[in-house]
Figure (tube, rainbow, N blue to C red):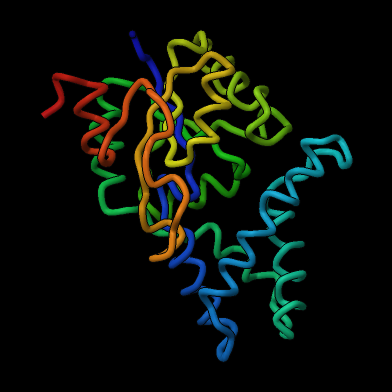
Length: 228
């Protein structure tokens, strides 16, 4: 298997959205259960994209969906949230192994996000978290949302690579199932704290992904044998 590029899920796989968003919520909405608010906000993520994936709405960048969902959740919590809070998704902290692992991978491979985040969101998040991407790929170039195959294939096409030359890396088995169906190689890295201490999903690999790694340092070692 010759892998020339690795593309990454970002929310949950590369960055800790739950604690990072809760921190931002706590600073802006004192008195609100910030962790519960962050969790509820994230829960609106997939239903908002589903309407676009299903053809019920034209493509809308995730920045705008986050803002819409923010106001819905704020109303549910009985508070009013400023639009500026939606920028919390641009200030997510990376997991401890991510920057070093990506830096090692970058020496031998193209690395890029294949996220549902917009180019603007992913660029600002990379600045905050120090993610050393070579370029920004994902939903916006496909004008659709994962797990639609067009998102994975558009990322490969943008790099002028065949799907089998590109590895999708994620902490979510459903993301990898979709990527494999689109012809990409797959790499699983668990994030056991993504959803907090009660997490029950994605604790282990569901199948024989091409690479199953402990973290990004281990991923770099497995994908690039000559890496230290």
